[in-house]
Image (cartoon, one colour):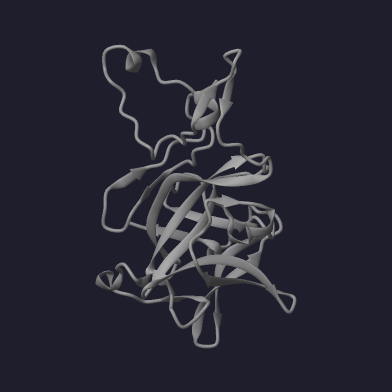
Length: 239
């Protein structure tokens, strides 16, 4: 029972870090327990990236307790993170500059993508603890220069926007800071490297790109049905 609860919180899919081999992110539908053959004979290999582990203790009557209590309406960061370069359908790379709080898509050579360039995003996966959501909950951070910035959603003068603020995503996310959380969804069935991301704070609004002046900016775009195929919402994980 315990294994089933923990494994059900691990996000799905296989993603790649830039320039590396695939990293495993377990299936949400994974079996709660490994096959019997992995328990006897062949040793099963597991890492902290596969399962969210919480400390437990036994009470006086041998009841099992979690030592860390979780709020019923909160999210907790998992050990499972990965780094990615985000590209739109025009093969432009998402970039954040240290002198700006917006993200823009630009043409960039592979050698320009490095730590501190504002192009290598860290994806932080969060486990569900009571919030009804329809996919892995994620937050994004990126290092530009010597500082780290987190992506968040905001409403400025009646317009819903994506911005970046200094600081890492927190370990625990309560109701008042869900502005940084997005729900990761496959863009189309069968394509495990292309996704769309829906704001948890603003349901029905997805990350997208749009031309504003001379810039191709990262924006929030409304999609009422959620199933509509809109190529401007397609974010490709670059391998």
